[in-house]
Length: 171
Image (cartoon, rainbow, N blue to C red; front, side, top):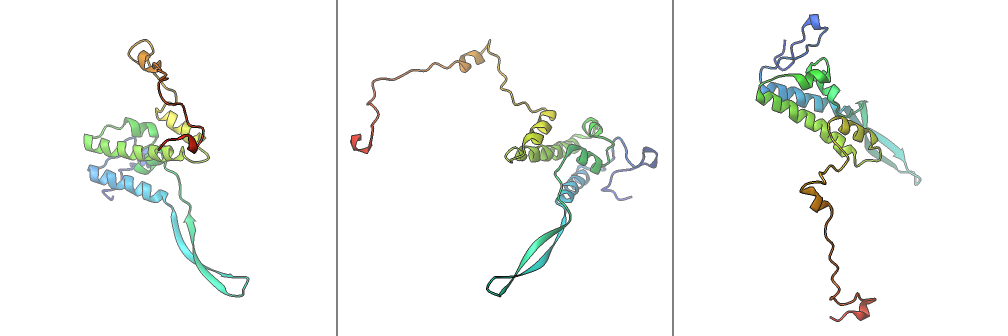
């Protein structure tokens, strides 16, 4: 059995509740393999096109043999050898391995966060809310936040009136 792959006992159907990694470096390598896998597999092909003037133009295009996939927590858990995402969250590892897992989960979270800038952000919002994000502004209006939530606005009337055009401005 390769040391960078998790133990997969036959009794557990090929997956263990807590895969064993001998070091943080080996776990980090496996996490990186997951994100590399998500990029898909492709090759380039030359495409020759005949233009209106009779000349031909050859360009290269990318053809995917396996389409890229978005990262997911369950995908990460399965790739690492866990039986579920809950098992991934519950796994107790040494601190340096826990840090590797947290970083991998944060990379997945970052992909959801970046998806918020796209035209189809609804699923990213749903995923982030399930990861503990909140889209409501939470504040305690009875304590120190009360003064900040009701700022005092002062109107200064001693300034020059606003100019109506460039001609009204003295330089």
